[in-house]
Amino acid sequence: MASNPPAIVARELIFKGWNTIERVTFESTSDDGQVQRTNREVVDHGQASVVLALDPERDVALLVRQWRSGLMSVGEGPFLLEACAGIIDPGETPEICARREAEEEIGFRLRDLRPCGSVVPSAGTLTERMYLYIAEVSCRDRVGEGGGVAQEGEAIEIVEIALPELFRMARAGEIEDAKTLILVQSLMLDRLLGRGGQMPAS
Image (cartoon, rainbow, N blue to C red; front, side, top):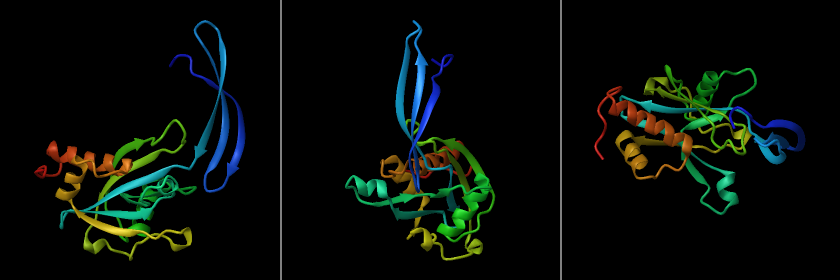
């Protein structure tokens, strides 16, 4: 299949708002020459940056908790514990976005950012790609109260979690947000391999 990928033959705009939704028609040809057309609804939410902020002096991570419409729409508890994140604005690089979001959401100016790659959270539906980072902060890096941008409907709670407890939560399957779990596991792997200290005990 990799040598004979489908081709896009039509696009139809269905909705344009906070997200853009298109119906995209794909055409593929099988090995025996049969042509098949498939329609898929594709959601463009933009690209995003995510940063797990750590205070090594206090051995804590700074996370955020906020309501999520997707959870509410299926009747689940709306509040999700996450690393701070946001959509990359036009003209921004992923790193600039990560720094801006950290100041808006947790009120800290980040030190050096360590890239941890990028992920596609739901490639069957979303065009979104998330750029992942880990960064350090200290009390001297505080530049504001955080909490998000009120004009954008954000009401973000800042949550400090000791790293041993955060690692326990990851092991126990208590971190539901995928981007956050990936970053926490990346940090755990670093420590397991000796890049940043010993792994806390379970």
